[in-house]
Image (cartoon, rainbow, N blue to C red; front, side):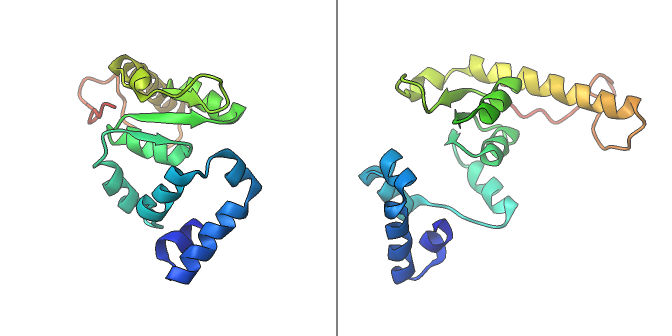
Length: 162
């Protein structure tokens, strides 16, 4: 339906919006007037990854449910807050220390609670450590890769900080 909302004719757009409104999961959970307006006016879609990368670089912060969208933001130095909704997404956010909000919690989401560089410093450390461990694992097991040895003083990664 989202593709129709972005690329469809006026009739297709209305049909797509009606299909969303008729979906029990959507209508009972989050499709209020504000969300409908966002869907109609701000929805972005592209099959080209670099289009999304160009878009996300222009943002101050990304809030989202989608793993790849959040990672694209973080990899471009844009703070991202992951909205978690199941054990898989919680575990991923915890592993990489990505600031996250459990959408099923009783706690109200307040953006200012997450707008703290200390939260993103934790992510930056976790990412660096995981990258280093993966490069070391591949090298120790004689698996060809293009990862940089971050412990070697002669090579420096371009450091992007969320």
